[in-house]
Length: 342
Image (tube, rainbow, N blue to C red):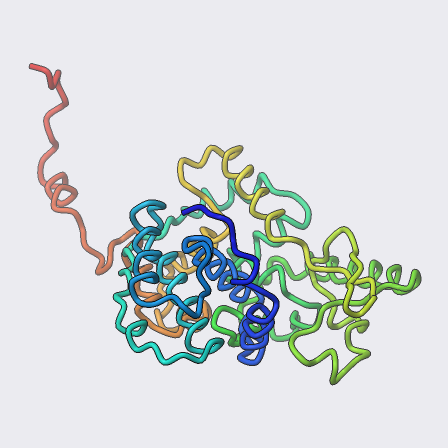
């Protein structure tokens, strides 16, 4: 899957039409970046060919190569197909019914990695400062990594003990738990952000990125304290389009690296990521007897089937099943182990 990208195939006109189509539909910047990447890879796979000239055979060859040569997973292959569907249907506006008929790879059903409460405490014990507070919100509120990183000052409601998650996965908003144990820490964090914001304004900065068209409708909002990130980055940057000095939220890789190092230091024999805290949040709530639909709402799942996966990792099993071996042990003590090689 190599080859130089022809200069005319992914030229200015196609790029401009692609980005305009993405933004008209209010798709996320991450989706925009991912789709653009797959379109570029398709062009490289067929060097010298204009995307508008490609047909069913070429697209199927590319998707097959992803699975056979690069051995990508079903989710990755489906994302590539979604990018091509968008390119032909929404950008080039070509009626290609065969694209809809392409078989999408089936996602593998995987049981999520879940930490015990002792393991969660051990990992959190290895974290410090902002990284620890963010990780505690991942576990205590069941947040996704970017949902936590993109919290703004006005998203914290101390009176209702809630966090407002805006534009979560799928673009929807929801209300999440605010752990009572971290209210004081969050108050201190907000005080820190307020002081940092005042310093930024004093030196002519203090601006922040706003969602969609809000910056045009409320031009002064980008400098208001309520719109500032709850977990700001340590550095500011110059935004070329507006010529303003902005401060972004803390980059997600900072917490990812910190959690990975903490899990190793805590000697947890599992593949622990930031998302493992969310899995553990859901599982522990179900273990505590909370209704699965309540957990579904807190997680922001549209389909109950997505939440049901956590019933497979409960300590007591999906239906409180007890192993027959455990029952047998209550009737008769097993004989001591001897040398199994005899």
